Image 1 (cartoon, rainbow, N blue to C red):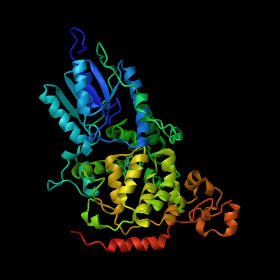
Image 2: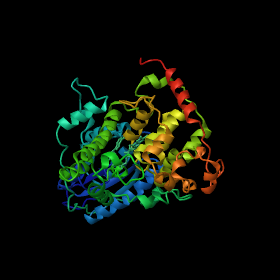
Image 3: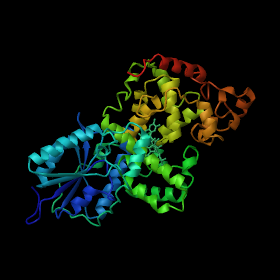
Image 4: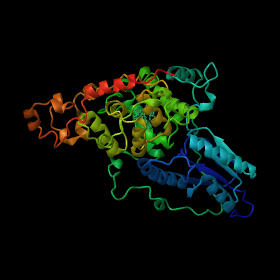
Length: 485
Ligand code: FAD
């Protein structure tokens, strides 16, 4: 035990997916407890662990922890880093520091819930105070029930219920200082966790687009509400426009709270069209709906929500899957999306829908393969949003897009990237192609290709499938399924 004489025993403040000081109820409870506070982040390891994070998000985590260390330092505090099984690590820290209380903010992924429930029970059995708080969502999933007492299975009534349940709680501000213990326990060095890629450093372009950390999240929110929210409802579908908030990776690790974002749009009534504010809030509520699904159906990332899809005749094809992953399908909008994902660890929402539809319906590759690839490569990978959206595109999810709605990658490209600016940014070999053919290079006359310096099949692939034939094959596969059981 390391407390000094007459000092109250410390409280452990356990950070998880809430890497922020603002609107952090566990932090507030620790700061006002009258005890010295020991902030700790545990990189959870082992079979029961929540996570683990994909490689792109580990890059984010590294930088986010650096930012949190600095922010805590400014409050006169520190961040203790440890790794291992959460309960074992906490028990060790309690023994080392003499702490008699642990506080944290709740999380809602199944592994996280299981760990937290067990930890809370074990701590309390040992006479340790253990308290948890809300903060990852606007409304906690167990609270929201439909009129019949069940959970919601469609988005529209879910949204109405949220609207009717009033404004989410107002965010609270960060404390100005945090009482430090007389002596600090040992911390791992962040570098020893090797979260950053080195050989090769595939994340070398990430910093062009991202600055992880709470301060950057707030800056982004401010910038978004001032410059892009106006017009959001329409512009959000155009990948070449800076029209969306880019807050998803910050939300994924809790660098900003959804309540802070929600309330930032309140002040804009009268300045920004209501349509834009409502549309943006509806997207934030999609995130809630995804968590609602995950909470009530914990196997969302591995089992079809609608069991009718359990017999779907998938075609596992390593070569086609690899072409999709590398952005070499011969369909420029798909390839631009997959390359944006690789280059920046992020992809525009409209393009996520197009690339996911292409994998599932044009290639007939199991949606779980796509979900896993996105989980490893997205900096905003989120256990609820990723799984729910993949199932949404596959048609197997709650309130999903019907399977027969199969995106035509050429028409989608022409509609949402009419000048091909997005293609040119991520598929440089097509940069000089006329706009008329930028989404269908395989139809371009030889002289047009020559002028653009492209030899199809050499510089850029021919389509790996014929969309019309693939569409029919997908519809036939779907028709082979039995009706809902
Ligand atoms: P904005 O348009 O500014 O929206 C604001 C916030 O609302 C987002 O940050 C996000 O938190 C939430 N949001 C927006 N759209 C959705 C949606 N469809 N579902 C759930 N929440 C939404 N989002 C993730 O955060 N993590 C994922 O792992 C993820 N995987 C996806 C996989 C597929 C196949 C698809 C189709 C979508 C996925 N999304 C995921 C949802 C969406 O694409 C991203 O949230 C969005 O593109 C993030 O950009 P933004 O912050 O600029 O969004």
